[in-house]
Structure formats: C-alpha cells, structure tokens
Image 1 (cartoon, rainbow, N blue to C red):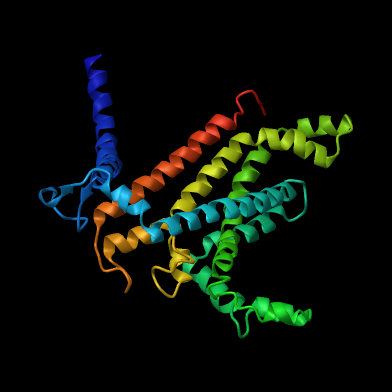
Image 2: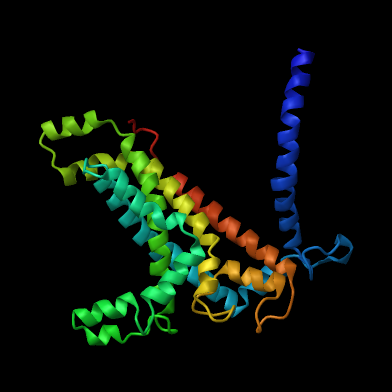
Length: 301
C-alpha cells in the first residue's frame, strides 16, 4: 500500500505543481491584487497599498468602464442570438443528409482557421470600404443608392459593422458543436417519428431541441468566454484605443495595466486585476444560471 501511495504521489506531483504554478497562483494573485493600489504588474508586494473594494468602486463610477460593459452585454446578447440561431440552422441542414456535407462544413468553418487580423482586414478593406467595398458594390448593382452611400465604419454604424464581422467568424465554430450534438441522436428516433406522422419542423421542435440542451449549455458557455475575451476585433475596428463605440472591458483593462493610447497615461494594475475578476464572475454567473434553468438529466439519446 505504501508503495502504491508513493507511486501515485510521484505521478501526480508534476501535474499538481504545474497546475498550482500556471493556474492556481495567478488566480489567487489576481484576486489579491484587485484589493490593492498597484502601479505595475511586476511591483513587489511591499509597494502594494491595501484599499479594499476601492478598485471596484472606482470602476463602476467610471463612465468609460460602464460603456465597455454595455458594449460587452450587446456583443454577448445580440451576437449570441445571431451566432446561435445561424449556427444551429446550418448544423441542422448539414446533418439532414445533403450531398457535399464535408465540403460545406469545411467552407463554413474556414473563417476560424484564418487569422483574426487577416479576417478583420478583409472586412475593413474589402467589405466595408466606402470606395470599392462589397456592400457598396452590391447595393449599387441593385439600385439601392441610399444604402450604398452609408459609411459603415463611422461612429453611428461602427459597432454594428464590428458585430456582424465578428459573428461571421464565430458561426463555424459553434456550428461544429451543434453538429456533434445532433449526430449523437439516434437516427432510429427520427425514423420512428416519421412513421408516426411527425414532419421535419415537429421533429426539430419536439425531439432535436430537447436533446440538445446539454450542447446548448456548452455553446452558451463557450460564447460567454469568447465574448469576455473580446479584444483584438475591438482594437482593429478602432482608430483610437479608448473608442467608446467599440471599447470592451478587455481593452479597458489593457489600457489601465499598460497605459496604451494617448488618452490613458495612468498605470493601474490593481484596477486591471479588478476588471479580470469582474469578467470571471460574469462567466461563472452565466454558467450557473445555465445549469440551473437548462436541465437535461431526464433526456436520453
């Protein structure tokens, strides 16, 4: 028994040590930093000044941070509705027995392989371009002159343009998650439903959707994580770092920690840590609510 314990400890020790160093320690340090006034991320603890919840109070009293949270909520809600609806529709179509399923699946997933920088550049220069963009050319061809003259990258339309471009790049990823869930459903269930007289819409409503509750929770969680980490697209669609139309909490945290941009010169790692804690709490809350209200324990494939 002692030899077995020694062997178990020997094999587990490297993994436990790496987990503590790479995951647990940064989490604890970030949470601790959020209660202190800290200038730089690498400042020794001797320079930390305890201020309690002062960083959190400062954040929620700052209009720019509140704006970033509102933008994040819009990305999560509106973008989530768009991405989940279209990706589910495509997954249902691709698993309905159409020809060339592998080809279409690869084409739809292709934007996830392309670099986000390259994808955003394509949208900025070749889709939204006010001179020769795809949208401008399309509306000119159909004679819709008023729409062809819209400046999609101005302050009025920039957020919507950003959201559409981002959703375009995320649909393929979530489509694969839906597809994996649908393919786990036994074809015999659909055959039995067809024999009983259920049409395709009825099968989708009363069979496919209930059996995809677990997959829906996974998709919502993954979408929440990616939305919280929204950074690169915001930077690429903004001419300035603290653009109120596209700023997100991750961008705000970056500017506070590293002092990026002309309008932000103060370095405040404590506030940056508090932003990270708030975003983590948001993801945990969403995950908890999904587990509470979306139950699939009684359903079987």
